Image 1 (cartoon, one colour):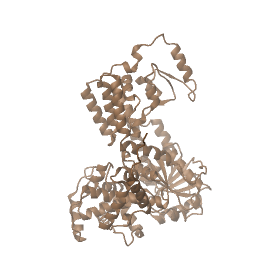
Image 2: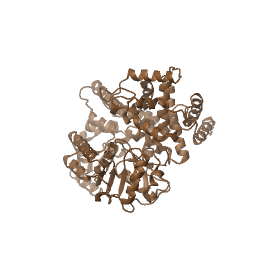
Image 3: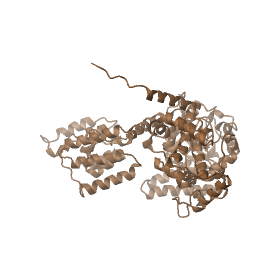
Length: 613
């Protein structure tokens, strides 16, 4: 950060071997504003400077020296000895300063010409930026270093671009994310120390179970993968090895680390296996069936050592009902990994009514150790993420019934910045997941809830998404969604059967009807204590559902970015609820109404009078 902007003006730079350096301002929606965009290119060249600043990634000492950022690298313990080495380095220099060492005086040459180089650089930044502005303006600032008539003029242009970013909504959103990431580990009311986790067991060798086992192996934690089917275990171990080998082929993993990770994973076909009784933590990852999970927890209760944590990977089921199968509900909690578990960074830990402070502290510490963004949620249907996504998905079905085809629903959501819309997301996850939840938990829908029958019909037609090569879209040619005339015809016939007159629906209405129930449910999560804080909800959606960082998460977006803020959100919920009484998710949260009233009052307040002399 600022330290690396201070270093280039120096004639020489001495760096500890253990140190790292970088310019991470891009992660806050900013650019290096203390001359970094003007000096760094003169020191190491435009291309590597742009890469460092637009990625925000840290460099080790060896790479810094190779680029010319460091003139000497010295061994140091906890930073001790660097100052002494720097003094010695300076004393060994000849008298006087070589003018070429003054970075601001160096000419900046651009290989290939300014127009060609910066045109390509800006296009590369645009593709990698996911809609963020800061990487593009970093390229523009470096271009100013090449084109400005003087170093001072370049600095002036850097300041202008910095001010533009600092005043914009993107910087505010990304800074919100920065602080939100540091808040999630703070569990209100829990100060118990975590238990040590030195071994684990995962029950269920499906895709999720295998991914969770990889999470432990990746961090050197021995893990036993348990499944009653030897064939399932063999298949999953083969899949795990193939995933690691793919990373070796890409240069992301060494052969030695592949071997070490595979040695961390053992298998068992029964919980009676001696290896299972010594685990410090168990994660159940079988099908989303309550009775099956309760049966497994009854077995775990019988074989697990005292103090072992019994965790369920359920995405929707009641943690307390699962814990009721044991004699130790204080050691039970939810650990909802997101699929694929070895890749997705979110871990939604779920507090049962009897979960002890020690249990919660342990799973939160475990999440951090596994490299996850661990968020604590309360116990309800779907917890934070899947509870909020329920209305989002249900409205997508009703929009199809009323006049849309799948792409009409997904396109406005993608235009907002999400990687995929609700229907493409369901094709990826599997349409049968929602179908099975609806069949297994019929009490989810009350008298005021419109039932999403169309979604049942598409599942019953055998179109389960990518895994069957057909869902809301066609996937016969691969993983990219292709519009399917069969689906359009199927939907139109369903609308006619239901007596629904189809109509043209604007992109604005589509976006509102998908997003507003989600945000409203987020306020209800806060109101009920399911989520600790608004920013926790944003982290869930940033890291579990691909919500764009530049919007800060759905709660930040609704409060600070969507036109009209919370007052308009409350009014729109009431309007859409009257026009489309599809469910209780349109009834505004009491907390939202309270917050909206505060915001409206603040907006209506007169500006304070200017001070007079």
